[in-house]
Image (tube, rainbow, N blue to C red; front, top):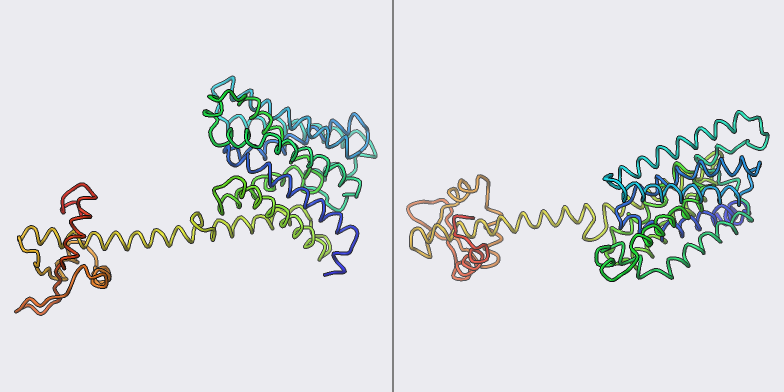
Length: 378
């Protein structure tokens, strides 16, 4: 493993993947919180026309020009989407869908035009669709690092404003903040994250790197600060793991492996995260169902006691089961453990009977008062 990590190419790819995780982790949080998860998909596809136009203008695959072109068309697509949603009755998802399809169609047309032009330098240009990590050079890392630094500086400068606009744009507007400008800035900044990962992951898979780390982090916390840190951690870890895994066997594509690595993180987060995880949610609902059945049985015993004007009225086990349409013995045993009911004999009958204890009677009265209704509601 140490020999693998000391390889110059693997180090370069791993550092590039870490930069993608860093930029996507921070900027993706705002896209997820603003319920614009499709934004990353739109802007990554919108980057393709910029890649092709930059190649047509420059005549080569010079990385700086390529990324600048991708940023320009990605930003234009973002502004086009905002214009559509603000100046028409289109919803955000419809605006994003239109911007995505139009941009990608233009990109494919330009790409096929370049492929038919006979330019010898166009070889490998289509690798921007799915990424080509092995083609990254140390000099490319400086460009990616510069874009990432610019994005982080902007986020640092406008952190409070971005946070308020993401959670409550109406309140931000009442404070006099330029909400439209801030939203446009956040949207365009997602294009920066797309540009950083364009060469390694490609326009098709870059969506996952923008959205997935933030979605996974959201499962673990409700605080934006913690969510951002976790998102960066998940994104960088997935990037490095994907890069190292791709080096363990010949022919494994780095971009898809990075996406698969972050997908595993998302799956684990959706399943195990406290409070929000599916497993915890299932346990909570199971506990609520059990507690609800105990309360229902308790109020049923109370209703029977009230109807017979006997606080110690013995209710037969089979009658309680028939009333609730299912077996209630487990719920009654739990109530007995809490000292709310007690078993009694009711001769000449030999079947189990239960009555409320004074504590159970008081608890049933409290529950009925809390529900605001009579015992019949149970």
